[in-house]
View 1 (cartoon, protein in one colour):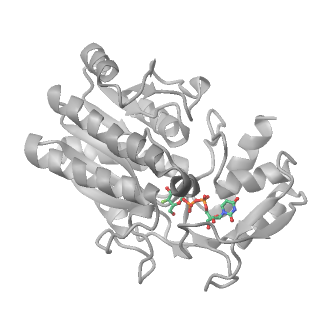
View 2 (view 1 turned 90 degrees about the vertical axis):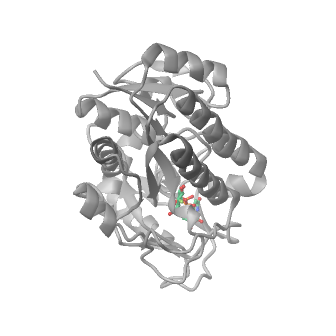
Length: 324
Ligand code: UFG
Protein backbone atom coordinates (compact mmCIF):
# COMPACT_ATOMS: atom_id res chain seq x y z
CA UNK A 1 0.00 0.00 0.00
CA UNK A 2 1.33 3.46 -0.88
CA UNK A 3 2.17 5.37 2.29
CA UNK A 4 1.65 9.09 2.69
CA UNK A 5 3.25 10.92 5.60
CA UNK A 6 0.64 13.31 7.02
CA UNK A 7 2.17 15.88 9.35
CA UNK A 8 -0.56 17.19 11.61
CA UNK A 9 -2.61 14.06 10.84
CA UNK A 10 -4.27 14.21 14.27
CA UNK A 11 -5.52 17.74 13.63
CA UNK A 12 -8.75 19.02 12.19
CA UNK A 13 -8.02 19.18 8.46
CA UNK A 14 -5.25 16.56 8.64
CA UNK A 15 -7.55 13.91 10.11
CA UNK A 16 -10.21 14.52 7.45
CA UNK A 17 -7.48 14.20 4.81
CA UNK A 18 -6.39 10.87 6.36
CA UNK A 19 -9.93 9.55 6.03
CA UNK A 20 -10.04 10.59 2.38
CA UNK A 21 -6.56 9.14 1.70
CA UNK A 22 -7.60 5.83 3.18
CA UNK A 23 -10.77 5.83 1.08
CA UNK A 24 -8.56 6.37 -1.99
CA UNK A 25 -6.40 3.34 -1.14
CA UNK A 26 -3.41 5.06 0.51
CA UNK A 27 -2.09 4.40 4.00
CA UNK A 28 -1.90 7.71 5.89
CA UNK A 29 0.97 7.75 8.41
CA UNK A 30 0.23 10.57 10.85
CA UNK A 31 3.12 12.49 12.41
CA UNK A 32 1.85 14.87 15.08
CA UNK A 33 3.08 16.33 18.37
CA UNK A 34 -0.52 16.39 19.66
CA UNK A 35 -0.19 20.05 20.65
CA UNK A 36 -3.39 20.76 18.75
CA UNK A 37 -4.31 17.30 17.51
CA UNK A 38 -6.01 14.36 19.20
CA UNK A 39 -4.97 10.72 19.38
CA UNK A 40 -8.56 9.61 18.88
CA UNK A 41 -8.74 11.48 15.55
CA UNK A 42 -6.14 9.11 14.05
CA UNK A 43 -8.25 6.22 12.79
CA UNK A 44 -7.00 5.27 9.37
CA UNK A 45 -3.31 4.51 9.90
CA UNK A 46 -0.48 4.66 12.43
CA UNK A 47 0.28 7.69 14.60
CA UNK A 48 3.85 8.69 15.32
CA UNK A 49 4.15 11.31 18.02
CA UNK A 50 6.88 13.74 17.11
CA UNK A 51 7.84 17.27 16.19
CA UNK A 52 8.59 18.43 12.65
CA UNK A 53 11.42 20.57 14.03
CA UNK A 54 13.14 17.40 15.25
CA UNK A 55 14.97 15.96 12.25
CA UNK A 56 16.03 12.82 14.17
CA UNK A 57 12.39 11.94 14.72
CA UNK A 58 11.59 12.68 11.08
CA UNK A 59 14.57 10.60 9.89
CA UNK A 60 13.26 7.60 11.83
CA UNK A 61 9.78 7.92 10.35
CA UNK A 62 11.08 8.29 6.80
CA UNK A 63 13.38 5.28 7.32
CA UNK A 64 10.61 3.09 8.72
CA UNK A 65 7.72 4.00 6.41
CA UNK A 66 9.43 5.16 3.19
CA UNK A 67 6.54 7.47 2.27
CA UNK A 68 5.78 8.14 -1.37
CA UNK A 69 4.65 11.68 -0.55
CA UNK A 70 4.10 14.14 2.26
CA UNK A 71 0.93 16.04 3.11
CA UNK A 72 2.05 18.85 5.37
CA UNK A 73 -0.58 20.24 7.76
CA UNK A 74 1.41 20.58 10.99
CA UNK A 75 1.63 24.15 12.19
CA UNK A 76 -0.05 26.93 14.10
CA UNK A 77 -3.28 28.23 12.68
CA UNK A 78 -4.64 31.23 14.51
CA UNK A 79 -4.48 34.66 12.90
CA UNK A 80 -5.10 36.48 16.21
CA UNK A 81 -2.50 34.51 18.17
CA UNK A 82 0.12 35.07 15.47
CA UNK A 83 -0.06 38.81 16.16
CA UNK A 84 0.75 38.20 19.82
CA UNK A 85 3.23 35.31 19.49
CA UNK A 86 4.87 35.72 16.05
CA UNK A 87 7.99 33.71 16.94
CA UNK A 88 5.83 30.64 17.64
CA UNK A 89 4.46 30.97 14.09
CA UNK A 90 7.86 31.43 12.44
CA UNK A 91 9.35 28.56 14.42
CA UNK A 92 6.57 26.03 13.90
CA UNK A 93 5.40 27.02 10.44
CA UNK A 94 8.57 28.27 8.71
CA UNK A 95 11.38 26.43 10.50
CA UNK A 96 9.21 23.31 10.74
CA UNK A 97 8.58 23.32 6.98
CA UNK A 98 12.30 23.81 6.32
CA UNK A 99 13.18 20.88 8.57
CA UNK A 100 10.64 18.70 6.74
CA UNK A 101 11.90 19.76 3.29
CA UNK A 102 15.48 18.89 4.27
CA UNK A 103 14.45 15.39 5.30
CA UNK A 104 12.37 14.97 2.12
CA UNK A 105 15.45 15.96 0.14
CA UNK A 106 17.63 13.50 2.04
CA UNK A 107 15.21 10.62 1.41
CA UNK A 108 14.40 11.70 -2.16
CA UNK A 109 10.67 12.03 -1.47
CA UNK A 110 9.38 13.80 -4.55
CA UNK A 111 5.78 14.84 -3.80
CA UNK A 112 4.34 17.32 -1.36
CA UNK A 113 0.83 18.66 -0.78
CA UNK A 114 1.12 21.78 1.35
CA UNK A 115 -1.56 23.26 3.57
CA UNK A 116 -1.33 26.96 2.81
CA UNK A 117 -3.90 29.66 3.37
CA UNK A 118 -5.90 32.46 1.82
CA UNK A 119 -4.10 34.58 4.42
CA UNK A 120 -1.10 34.80 2.02
CA UNK A 121 -3.01 37.39 -0.04
CA UNK A 122 -3.76 39.92 2.65
CA UNK A 123 -6.07 42.76 1.71
CA UNK A 124 -6.71 42.43 -2.01
CA UNK A 125 -8.24 45.00 -4.33
CA UNK A 126 -10.63 42.43 -5.77
CA UNK A 127 -12.80 39.60 -4.52
CA UNK A 128 -13.04 36.72 -5.42
CA UNK A 129 -9.29 36.25 -5.22
CA UNK A 130 -7.40 34.43 -7.97
CA UNK A 131 -4.13 32.54 -7.41
CA UNK A 132 -2.28 35.24 -9.34
CA UNK A 133 -3.37 38.09 -7.02
CA UNK A 134 -0.65 40.09 -5.26
CA UNK A 135 0.41 38.51 -1.99
CA UNK A 136 0.83 40.85 0.96
CA UNK A 137 -0.09 39.12 4.21
CA UNK A 138 -1.43 41.30 7.03
CA UNK A 139 -0.38 39.05 9.91
CA UNK A 140 2.52 36.74 10.91
CA UNK A 141 0.37 33.67 10.25
CA UNK A 142 -0.06 34.69 6.59
CA UNK A 143 3.65 35.53 6.32
CA UNK A 144 4.65 32.16 7.78
CA UNK A 145 2.58 30.45 5.07
CA UNK A 146 3.91 32.63 2.26
CA UNK A 147 7.56 32.16 3.31
CA UNK A 148 6.98 28.39 3.51
CA UNK A 149 5.51 28.43 0.00
CA UNK A 150 8.66 30.18 -1.27
CA UNK A 151 10.89 27.59 0.40
CA UNK A 152 8.92 24.75 -1.20
CA UNK A 153 9.40 26.42 -4.60
CA UNK A 154 13.16 26.61 -4.08
CA UNK A 155 13.39 22.97 -2.99
CA UNK A 156 11.36 22.06 -6.03
CA UNK A 157 13.99 23.83 -8.19
CA UNK A 158 16.97 22.22 -6.54
CA UNK A 159 15.76 18.67 -5.89
CA UNK A 160 12.77 18.15 -8.13
CA UNK A 161 10.01 18.00 -5.49
CA UNK A 162 6.63 18.34 -7.20
CA UNK A 163 4.16 20.21 -5.05
CA UNK A 164 0.52 21.19 -4.75
CA UNK A 165 0.23 24.35 -2.69
CA UNK A 166 -3.38 24.57 -1.51
CA UNK A 167 -4.54 27.92 -0.17
CA UNK A 168 -7.69 27.40 1.75
CA UNK A 169 -10.15 29.93 2.91
CA UNK A 170 -12.24 29.17 6.03
CA UNK A 171 -12.20 25.44 6.70
CA UNK A 172 -15.33 24.50 8.61
CA UNK A 173 -17.94 21.79 9.25
CA UNK A 174 -17.34 18.19 10.28
CA UNK A 175 -17.29 14.72 8.79
CA UNK A 176 -20.91 13.73 7.98
CA UNK A 177 -20.58 10.44 9.86
CA UNK A 178 -19.13 12.41 12.79
CA UNK A 179 -16.00 10.23 12.93
CA UNK A 180 -14.00 13.45 13.34
CA UNK A 181 -14.58 17.19 13.69
CA UNK A 182 -13.10 20.48 14.83
CA UNK A 183 -11.63 20.68 18.31
CA UNK A 184 -8.93 23.27 18.96
CA UNK A 185 -7.77 24.21 22.42
CA UNK A 186 -8.10 27.09 22.81
CA UNK A 187 -10.68 27.55 20.06
CA UNK A 188 -10.32 30.79 18.08
CA UNK A 189 -12.41 30.17 14.95
CA UNK A 190 -15.80 31.71 14.46
CA UNK A 191 -18.11 28.77 13.72
CA UNK A 192 -17.02 26.48 16.60
CA UNK A 193 -17.14 29.44 18.99
CA UNK A 194 -20.66 30.35 17.88
CA UNK A 195 -21.79 26.74 18.36
CA UNK A 196 -20.13 26.57 21.77
CA UNK A 197 -22.03 29.71 22.74
CA UNK A 198 -25.24 27.95 21.62
CA UNK A 199 -24.30 25.02 23.87
CA UNK A 200 -23.58 27.50 26.69
CA UNK A 201 -19.96 26.38 26.84
CA UNK A 202 -19.10 30.05 26.32
CA UNK A 203 -21.18 32.86 27.74
CA UNK A 204 -21.41 34.73 24.46
CA UNK A 205 -19.84 35.23 21.08
CA UNK A 206 -17.64 38.26 20.52
CA UNK A 207 -17.94 40.02 17.19
CA UNK A 208 -14.54 41.50 16.40
CA UNK A 209 -15.52 44.75 14.72
CA UNK A 210 -18.86 45.88 13.30
CA UNK A 211 -17.61 48.96 11.47
CA UNK A 212 -15.97 47.39 8.40
CA UNK A 213 -17.03 48.57 4.96
CA UNK A 214 -19.13 45.47 4.33
CA UNK A 215 -22.89 44.93 3.94
CA UNK A 216 -23.53 44.76 7.71
CA UNK A 217 -20.22 46.08 9.07
CA UNK A 218 -18.80 42.65 10.01
CA UNK A 219 -16.09 40.66 8.19
CA UNK A 220 -16.96 38.42 5.29
CA UNK A 221 -15.36 35.00 4.80
CA UNK A 222 -15.66 32.10 2.38
CA UNK A 223 -16.50 28.94 4.37
CA UNK A 224 -15.49 25.64 2.79
CA UNK A 225 -16.42 22.24 4.22
CA UNK A 226 -13.46 20.29 5.56
CA UNK A 227 -14.49 17.11 3.69
CA UNK A 228 -14.48 19.03 0.39
CA UNK A 229 -11.02 20.31 1.31
CA UNK A 230 -9.86 16.79 2.12
CA UNK A 231 -11.07 15.57 -1.26
CA UNK A 232 -9.11 18.35 -3.01
CA UNK A 233 -5.96 17.18 -1.22
CA UNK A 234 -6.27 13.64 -2.53
CA UNK A 235 -7.13 14.82 -6.05
CA UNK A 236 -4.06 17.09 -5.92
CA UNK A 237 -1.83 14.28 -4.73
CA UNK A 238 -3.03 12.00 -7.53
CA UNK A 239 -2.47 14.78 -10.04
CA UNK A 240 1.11 15.62 -9.06
CA UNK A 241 2.01 11.92 -9.02
CA UNK A 242 0.46 11.39 -12.45
CA UNK A 243 1.51 14.60 -14.26
CA UNK A 244 4.73 15.39 -12.34
CA UNK A 245 3.80 19.07 -12.44
CA UNK A 246 3.45 21.50 -9.54
CA UNK A 247 0.63 23.97 -8.98
CA UNK A 248 -0.98 26.47 -6.60
CA UNK A 249 -4.74 26.41 -5.97
CA UNK A 250 -7.27 28.41 -4.01
CA UNK A 251 -9.88 26.31 -2.25
CA UNK A 252 -13.14 28.00 -1.37
CA UNK A 253 -16.71 28.23 -2.60
CA UNK A 254 -16.70 31.69 -4.17
CA UNK A 255 -19.45 32.82 -1.77
CA UNK A 256 -19.01 34.96 1.32
CA UNK A 257 -20.92 35.23 4.60
CA UNK A 258 -20.55 37.94 7.21
CA UNK A 259 -19.93 37.21 10.88
CA UNK A 260 -23.45 38.40 11.67
CA UNK A 261 -24.96 36.17 8.98
CA UNK A 262 -23.15 33.15 10.42
CA UNK A 263 -24.46 33.92 13.90
CA UNK A 264 -28.03 34.39 12.62
CA UNK A 265 -27.92 31.13 10.66
CA UNK A 266 -26.47 29.31 13.67
CA UNK A 267 -29.37 30.56 15.80
CA UNK A 268 -31.83 29.07 13.28
CA UNK A 269 -30.04 25.74 12.91
CA UNK A 270 -29.44 25.19 16.61
CA UNK A 271 -32.73 26.73 17.69
CA UNK A 272 -30.83 28.26 20.63
CA UNK A 273 -30.27 31.70 22.02
CA UNK A 274 -26.77 32.99 21.24
CA UNK A 275 -25.61 36.04 23.15
CA UNK A 276 -23.55 38.48 21.13
CA UNK A 277 -21.12 41.19 22.25
CA UNK A 278 -19.41 43.71 20.01
CA UNK A 279 -15.65 43.96 20.52
CA UNK A 280 -12.98 46.06 18.79
CA UNK A 281 -11.51 44.80 15.52
CA UNK A 282 -9.02 41.94 15.80
CA UNK A 283 -5.53 42.99 14.67
CA UNK A 284 -4.52 41.57 11.29
CA UNK A 285 -8.12 40.89 10.15
CA UNK A 286 -9.26 41.94 6.72
CA UNK A 287 -12.80 42.93 5.79
CA UNK A 288 -13.54 40.43 3.04
CA UNK A 289 -11.92 37.26 1.70
CA UNK A 290 -13.55 35.17 -1.00
CA UNK A 291 -11.79 32.57 -3.13
CA UNK A 292 -11.88 32.20 -6.87
CA UNK A 293 -11.51 28.41 -7.12
CA UNK A 294 -12.16 28.00 -10.83
CA UNK A 295 -8.65 26.70 -11.37
CA UNK A 296 -9.08 23.93 -8.76
CA UNK A 297 -12.39 22.88 -10.29
CA UNK A 298 -10.85 22.84 -13.75
CA UNK A 299 -7.56 21.09 -13.18
CA UNK A 300 -8.69 18.63 -10.48
CA UNK A 301 -12.27 18.18 -11.62
CA UNK A 302 -13.02 19.08 -7.98
CA UNK A 303 -16.71 19.02 -7.10
CA UNK A 304 -17.81 20.90 -4.00
CA UNK A 305 -20.46 18.70 -2.37
CA UNK A 306 -20.82 19.66 1.29
CA UNK A 307 -20.10 23.38 1.42
CA UNK A 308 -23.50 25.02 1.35
CA UNK A 309 -23.48 27.00 4.59
CA UNK A 310 -26.40 25.04 6.04
CA UNK A 311 -24.57 21.71 5.69
CA UNK A 312 -21.42 23.26 7.15
CA UNK A 313 -23.27 24.53 10.21
CA UNK A 314 -25.39 21.38 10.61
CA UNK A 315 -22.43 18.98 10.48
CA UNK A 316 -20.44 21.20 12.86
CA UNK A 317 -23.45 21.44 15.19
CA UNK A 318 -23.97 17.65 15.20
CA UNK A 319 -20.28 17.20 15.98
CA UNK A 320 -20.26 19.71 18.83
CA UNK A 321 -23.38 18.20 20.38
CA UNK A 322 -21.69 14.79 20.30
CA UNK A 323 -18.75 16.16 22.31
CA UNK A 324 -20.85 17.09 25.36
N1 UFG B 1 -14.45 36.31 14.59
C1 UFG B 1 -15.24 36.96 15.50
N2 UFG B 1 -15.32 36.43 16.75
C2 UFG B 1 -14.64 35.33 17.14
C3 UFG B 1 -13.82 34.68 16.20
C4 UFG B 1 -13.75 35.20 14.93
O1 UFG B 1 -15.86 37.98 15.21
O2 UFG B 1 -14.75 34.93 18.31
C5 UFG B 1 -14.36 36.84 13.22
C6 UFG B 1 -12.95 37.19 12.82
O3 UFG B 1 -12.61 38.49 13.25
C7 UFG B 1 -13.06 37.03 11.30
C8 UFG B 1 -14.08 35.91 11.11
O4 UFG B 1 -14.79 35.85 12.34
O5 UFG B 1 -13.57 38.19 10.75
C9 UFG B 1 -13.45 34.57 10.85
O6 UFG B 1 -12.43 34.37 11.81
P1 UFG B 1 -11.73 32.97 12.07
O7 UFG B 1 -10.79 33.17 13.21
O8 UFG B 1 -12.74 31.91 12.17
O9 UFG B 1 -10.93 32.71 10.72
P2 UFG B 1 -9.93 33.69 9.92
O10 UFG B 1 -10.72 34.28 8.80
O11 UFG B 1 -9.23 34.61 10.80
O12 UFG B 1 -8.86 32.67 9.40
C10 UFG B 1 -9.25 31.55 8.64
C11 UFG B 1 -8.16 30.53 8.64
C12 UFG B 1 -6.99 31.03 7.87
C13 UFG B 1 -7.41 31.54 6.51
C14 UFG B 1 -8.49 32.56 6.63
C15 UFG B 1 -8.85 33.03 5.24
O13 UFG B 1 -7.81 30.17 9.97
O14 UFG B 1 -6.10 29.96 7.66
O15 UFG B 1 -9.56 31.96 7.32
O16 UFG B 1 -10.14 33.03 4.87
F1 UFG B 1 -6.39 32.16 5.90
